[in-house]
Image (spheres, rainbow, N blue to C red):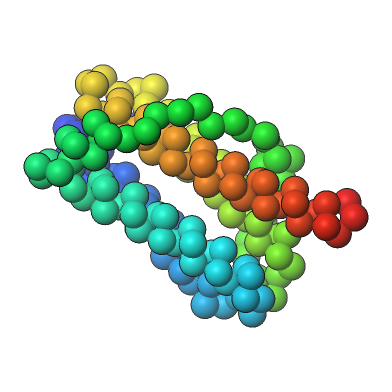
Length: 155
C-alpha cells in the first residue's frame, strides 16, 4: 500500500480506527449480555482515542503525544491464530464475540505491521509502530479474556 504523503497515511489510519469504533459500538447495541456489551463499549472507546491521537497529528499536541508515548513489547499469545473467521450474529455466545474481536484485532495488527514495513520516513514509522502496539494490546486483552472465560467454563 503506497501513500502520497504523511497526511494520507494519517487519514487512512483514522478511517480504520473510526471503522473499528463503529464496529464495536454497533455490536454493543445488539448484544444482550451486559458483560459483553461493556467490553465492546470499552474497545469502542479505545478505538475512538486512537482516532483522536491521529487527528491531533500536525497540531502542536501531536509531537508531544508521540514523544510521550510509552513503548513496550506486547506478548502475542496467538490465540487468534487458531480462530476461524466468523460473522457476528445477534445472540452469539460471549466466547464467539471474543473470537470475532480477536480476529479483527489480529487483522488490524497485521495491516499496521505491513504499513510499518513499507513506511519510508521516520514520522510514518513512528505512527505505525504506535498503532501496532495499541492493536497488540487489544489483541492480548481479548485473548486473555477468552482464555479466562474458557477456563471458567471448564475448557
